[in-house]
Length: 212
Ligand code: BEZ
Image 1 (cartoon, rainbow, N blue to C red):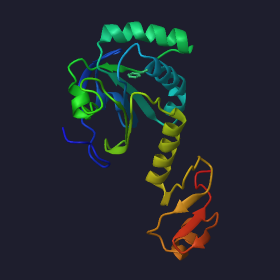
Image 2: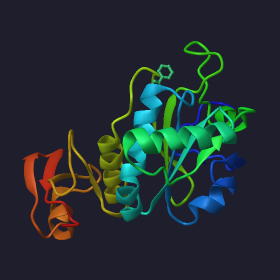
Image 3: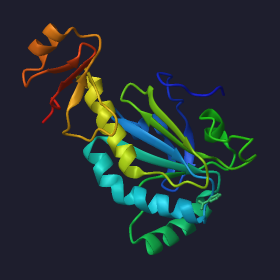
């Protein structure tokens, strides 16, 4: 499989998971999805990530985002590891982890980067929209645990910009000022964004977050 790029259709699959056999598209339904891979079970960084992900599940659910993790170990291994995660991270892992022993899903999503590691998946993240298109990809090395606040922040930005003609500036957090889409002339922007438009430069116009 070639590298998945933004705007590509996220490949569907049916796979064994820690919650039984699941079809990805059926699992996602009409909502958003986040699929993230881990190098291996019973490893320290992955253990903290899965525990953190479980604690963030409610926040993702509020945004209509379903979570699915993956590693190339088997379902029996996942079941034992989940006990450790729950115990050490003081949580309950409550979303499926794909048991991708045959690397089928890892290959579909290009999660194995042979020059980093021949067999283990890197820390890939795919955010998938209700149209099943890839909205975001991120790749972290095995040695760096992901920042789940950043993943939520990106979801907030993706969902805002999907429905409003805005973009979000550097370090933006939900509720802060946003940037008017460059395609909209300032006069038109003032009609659309009734809370006001601040023209810093003709190409840099700010407006309050339209959802708050
Ligand atoms: C970890 O999750 O701790 C890890 C996995 C593979 C390589 C290095 C760290």
